[in-house]
Length: 99
Image 1 (tube, helix red, strand yellow):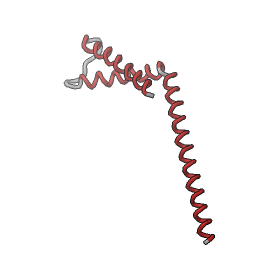
Image 2 (cartoon, one colour):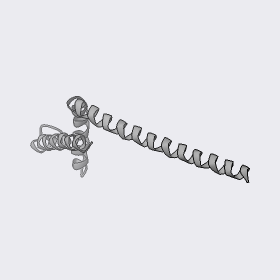
Image 3 (cartoon, helix red, strand yellow):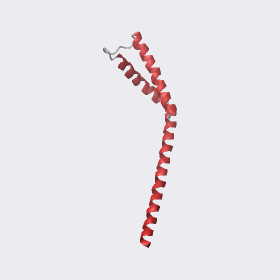
Image 4 (cartoon, one colour):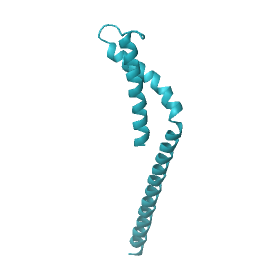
């Protein structure tokens, strides 16, 4: 998961540098007034999102599989704990009826 995040951040930083260079050189339009920085960040986000979607497909699938495994383990632990509580409740009821 960390690897995917770092790769995605790397793609964004690369797009940011390219967009900043294009805006600085005058190829891409500058933002209005003091909004130039926001313009560059937003444009870099818009460009990096589809690139990340296509380029990082395999890495995203790996991260997704890891998350599914963790969720399945948490569900199994939760179910095991719940069944232990049910067993303890049944034993307490049986002991209460015997007295």
